[in-house]
Picture 1 (cartoon, rainbow, N blue to C red):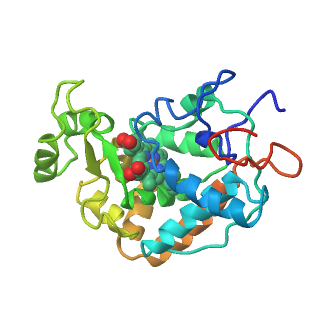
Picture 2: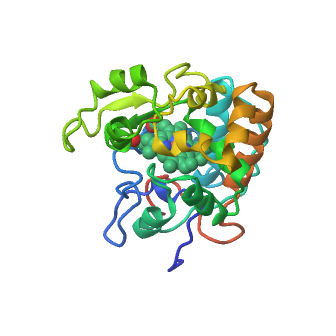
Length: 256
Ligand code: HEM
């Protein structure tokens, strides 16, 4: 069994806490946010029933991410397969390597570069915020302290995200209020009208390195779709376990 861990696509996030390690689901960037584990468990059970211990949880996550995007009307791509699953999790790596929503473009760029991802990858992957939700505690500072936010948009959000820390911390708001259930380029159009929910979203139009890409993606989906699918393949290739490394878990939430 491995004794050290890199952060990468090894399904470590799916592991529950055990006596020998604290899992990653309670890490600060994941707190209150990791959900849908039952969906993965359900897929895994069906795959195991047909072909036991052959398809890793890491590969299931990568395919499920692609299929979710396709189902919501986004681009499709071929997912390289053969990842294996970790035998451990690392709370400290989850805390140190995942970017927080307080990051500016310089921090975001460095964070993605540390994983071999470019500025284009970073701007295109941020477009995944065309779906899903965020907790008040992750956008409260932007609502009350920032000026590059549409006034009506901020006012409507403040109702469910009051100012004092501690009240309504986990109330949810849509990351893309325009077309929340479609995988499209509305996220970038929202940024152009100062309706980005997270600080780390809205900053993408403040910086010359990223503003041009946001403008291009906001004006049509073709370039966004091309860049997003390429970036998803690159992100899915971050430090996978291969060959005889790790294992193929029988249940995604625990090691064999
Ligand atoms: C650029 C750096 C990124 C930052 C700072 C960031 C930050 C966040 C935050 C704070 C949330 C809300 C979590 C919560 O409040 O529970 C969130 C949600 C989400 N993020 Fe990101 N994210 C980033 C990149 C990405 C990437 C690369 C993807 C995938 C390609 C992604 C996909 C999502 C999705 C789908 C949700 C919604 C989850 C849900 O509704 O359960 N994000 N992100």
